[in-house]
Length: 341
Picture 1: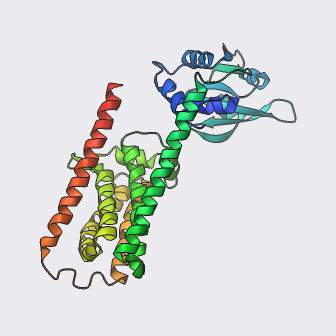
Picture 2: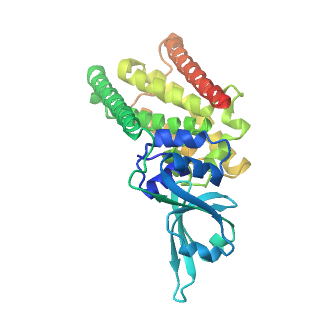
Picture 3: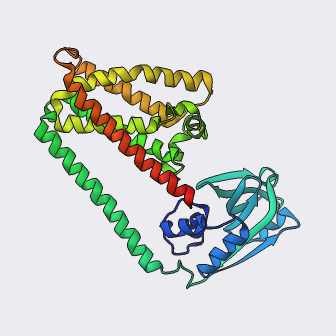
């Protein structure tokens, strides 16, 4: 079962039975990320291993793959070494940050620090107490699927009982809300420095590590109190709830959406002209806000948007505030818990 660390990736490459959650936790518990630490962990899993320093980098071609190699930019898992017609190493296939790479031999060797760790799993090599951990992992996966099923059931029921199915614009709005919740959730994970392969993959579409650069800026927070990812997640969560339970307030949602559009212009300007990099998840979020604006406009929800009493905005604003404060409390708890570890 997959994990998010190089240790889990290495166990996967070796074919050693393991669970991502436990293996990742053991890796994060290493005081120092060194080959000695890797060696101790592998020994716990019953995997024979040997660390060695190579006098000549070309000796790597004689080692059984996969093995760990230390480079100046971190550890990599070498999966294979190709040789040319002259029998000399030509290129290296390796895994770095969960992604497969292929690099010519000279380029790879230029950052290789000469230290490797080979591993030889046996028939009994496995994670300690693997069966119990595996059962817990299956149950955890089952809970996630059950949660998704229950959420889908509630959404379908809301669409039916609210009458949202009669308006194509409301269905489109709900679709953008769900997409927005997904994107802002990934943004929250990035803000909390929680490893997530999907978030990393999406963020690399426009600019490598662009999301990390943008989220490190002071401008990524609202007066240093809330992160914009929290604000976005609260926005899409409340919008989804209102559309499913109080569809009569859709015109008020249109007004709130209109108030958000100037921020999208500023955000794109800031990324383009101030820090000269792009946060893919942020750009997608801005695009979803404009898609919602078009849905509100084409659905006729802007007609009479300022008519009637503005008192109805009060519970809507309270809902945004309550969800935002709740998210912020949870995020702060996660940050403080991580700091104590």
